[in-house]
Image (cartoon, rainbow over all chains, first blue to last red):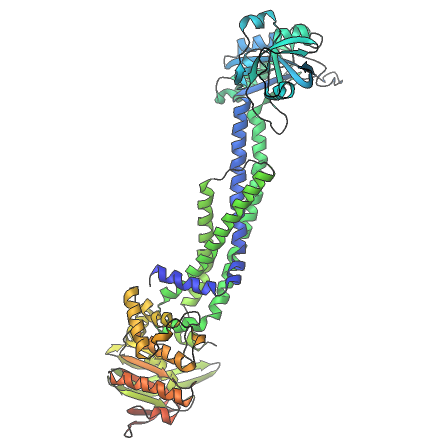
Length: 408
Length: 227
């Protein structure tokens, strides 16, 4: 008996009881759709993390001032700037793994241009800022060496600032007033888009020296800075360098190895890994749901197939009387349960794709679909069909022809 | 063609042993038309099931075309049923989901013939029972006589040498019964050996030999002179 004949006979009997067939495959449908959704969430989260590392710049560490509470009085995160340009130079000198450091001072302030107002954050830094955080220029240019050294009143603005102050017009060579100080715009940054936490494009960048002289002199006296972005030459050295920076900083700031530091080191890779971890928890949860419903679905198939074998005992006897061998009966029932589970698998895939599409549209989550999950679903559902269909099929095949034929 | 030597079949029902066939000897030659008669419980159906390789004897020997059946495994028995024997049952035993043609094709599926050959054989069989115009009707769309004719077509589709008919007219009215018996007679005249189980004298007298059974034994075995 050929496979096509078997499939033909199986679909006849499945179609004679469509509602039952669909209900039987419900467990598989739910299981497979969860498997697909689960894998999409997992790989979507991983992709998002990779993209964000790309956006923030890979291999970057951020060192920030932190009010030391060693004297029992916490002074608030913004009240003290414990980092200095001297720290920066010392780190560069002591740790060869550091390829570049971008210092940063910042303030939030009102900007006026073109008769419009906009509240944004202004960063004073060097050209390294653009390199390390992977900023590209849509228009204009970086700071020139003499602009940085002289403290020229030039500024680079982000896409959001442009939109709010100039609309779609080119802002290059326009004058904006930051804290009433006029600056000439020399560059427009390419859009990076928002993250969950902040709009990265809502930014204005000016030379460090200018910021210190004209904008934040009181807040950051002398060579004090708010933070520095440190680029490590290779990913393998990232975590070792993080430790080294801690050691060097403690030495510079005369803090013992177990004392409270007046700085904090942020590792973006680590931070994003935590996010990845939480989506992994979500995946495990879904995997559990998927696993349970696949097993329950399999048991459902087994149950229905046992009922079917009993119902069709006489029919099995007829087939045997006209010459069906044990193998023919076994295969026919196996194919039937395989078809139930495969149809369930297909509906589950469709449902899963629907869920993925809906969730990514509605919640704006990143979900990515890979073909492995489709293949996996097929393998899963078909093996469930074969495993749980085997016992009923064998029961049918082992019937004694005359007993089966006499069964009422 | 069929040689049965001191064959017995016993069933165990609870504590009781029931001897359905008690030490029976029969010889049936190729081309014979034999009626097996007897009241219910006489063992006639059990004997027929053993001859049809659906059941196995408890003791004794059964030779079908010089093959000792008791030495064959279930696959060989299935092959034998498929190629050498055709069954016609009292209640037709057609598969309800399949149409007439598909029902007739069923034994040919198991014999592994290709679909072209299958359809040709099945259509020939349906034509010979006069149902060429009903090939795509399901059993529940056919009358009892038509259903029985489909089941005869199914029995002869694989061109067997032996047809076993177990009360083939038991569920039919007398006119239809005659039509069915006419078909069976025609098959016999083409050289197919027929064994027919019945308890009706009218039906049994179509055969050339009548075997009467009672309590698992053959009590009479004679030529039917009236035929």
